Image (cartoon, rainbow, N blue to C red; front, side, top):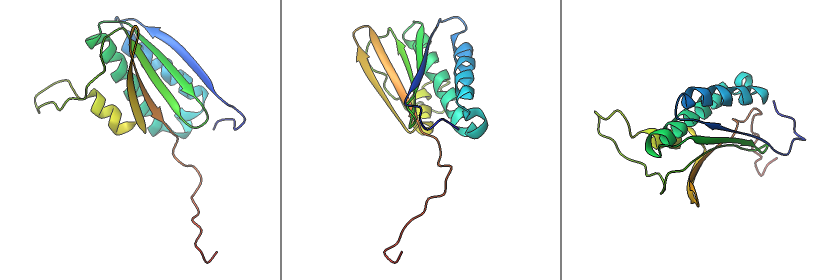
Length: 145
C-alpha cells in the first residue's frame, strides 16, 4: 500500500464557501487514491471523506469562512485537519430526533480513531486521525510458545 521508507507527506488546499464541500471531497479522494487507499482501504476512505465533508461544512456554516484542509500521512496515521476563522472550539451536541443538523462531531467521533480541536490566534483547527486496518493477521504468543 504505502512505501515503508516514506516518513511523511502532506497536502493543503483552501476551499471557499461556494462549492467547497464537494470540491474538498474530490480533492481528498485524489490524494487518498495516490496512497493506494481507495483500492486497499475503501472503508477508511469513506470515513475520511465523511469527516472532510463535515469539517468543511462546519467551517462554512458556523464560522462563515473558507476552510483550509490539510491532509498529512506519517506512515501511521492520516491526519485530516480543517482550519477556519471562527472563534471558540466546536462543542458536540445531542440533537433531538427532528433536528436536521448537529450530528457532525458525533459522526467524526464514530468514524475516526481520534480527533481534537484547538483554538489558534486566527480561528480554530479540528483534526481527525485515521489509521489503516491491520492487513496482517495478529499472532499472539502464549507462555508455552
